[in-house]
Length: 400
Image (cartoon, rainbow, N blue to C red):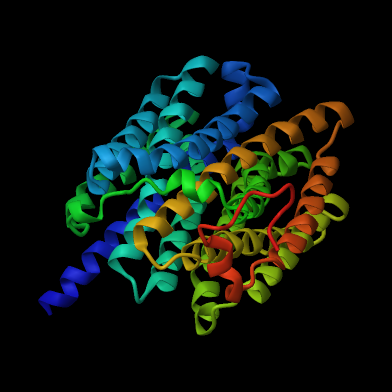
């Protein structure tokens, strides 16, 4: 019984930490109108509330492996949760756009560190259950998005203030902080090694970055603009928040279930193509028929995004057997990927201002799905060792 309890508590900590990594972003979309009236940020300014955290997630993923040389992963996670809790709480006092953007930087910095550190910790401490534990982590991450989308407009309505709705998200971050001590103790002998520059010399990492970035760019745009899109078509803030929550629930379900379904083999490409097909249905529906079964469109898009996120994280870890090196590879994929993903919400805002609607933006992401579908074909498990071999050299294109 004791062994079961010891094993359960680290899983509970990982789950609760994952739950905190998206609400601060998804909670903003349903409240866009009220926030804009108070701060005057405008559409492109509001896009920065998603762009800045995504950009920081990218930068933090590169910095994370370096930070682990100076500080143990468990302590880094604790500091990151403190930053996330502080950023959320300070939103209670945000009367202007500048302070609100500052809180996005605080929250994004905390999330960046966690996302850089946690996958390697999972690979190290659950070597026989990587797919399942990564699925749990990813599902909770996406479920946190549903929490933010659904809870913040409700709390804002009950309190009469959007600030209260956003600030309340500090509570689950504090709860996660209390569970950090139950994570497995850090092993100094397994400290991060200097593998980053070597990995960046392999073309495969750039392919993984591109796939991860283009897919998560679709997620970033959906988080930023799905609720405003449906509000423009007459939906209330609460109803549009429910749409965003539906998207996040679809993400969570697929992020948990697809890695379990795919665990029987090493080749994840068929499952990845399935997630891309679901994304294509969602983006095409938003562009051409948004009022026909909008809940189905949101669920399909969410399942495609969440499943692809989870499977790509596993694919990155599959490339290398060593947990430290695999964790660094995952961090680098996220780093470049999130830098790419930071731009689409702002690009969609610019396209909206130029065309008067979101249709062009949804079509842009439909095109990105097609590009990723081609790149996924390169992820042949039998060639992972060759792709990561020290003799691999950068090339003008993507790896074979």
